[in-house]
Length: 132
Ligand code: THU
Image 1 (cartoon, rainbow, N blue to C red):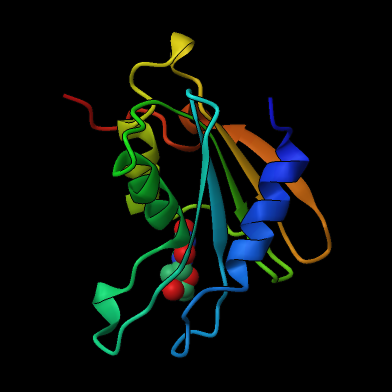
Image 2: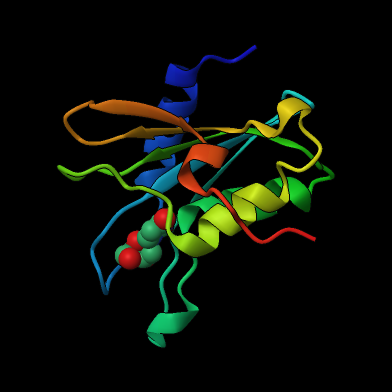
């Protein structure tokens, strides 16, 4: 099983292949699914700012469109001095694909440019969330 540091390294690689000419805020994510496969994604912005796509949702949607169903972990790297906590929309997305996990625990692993690392469960980051 791939370790958290490897997921973070792949997220770091992804953060270098992003498109953020407007915010200049680089983000990379690496999603590990229950199959053991991983998928990376970066943030992709747009001149119509509201259409910008976060790295996490890019990585998750790539996994889902390749046949994955259950998310296990997501690593998020951003080369800034503050950790890039997932935005509200991404938390809802992470929760969506966490549903079938035992005990409902998906790990969210964060790293900043000073190699500070923090690990949370999605339940810690997004309690009392909307579910159907
Ligand atoms: N961004 C992410 O990729 N993930 C998040 O969870 C928060 C924000 C991106 C979106 C935008 O391209 C840039 O960071 C600044 O908001």
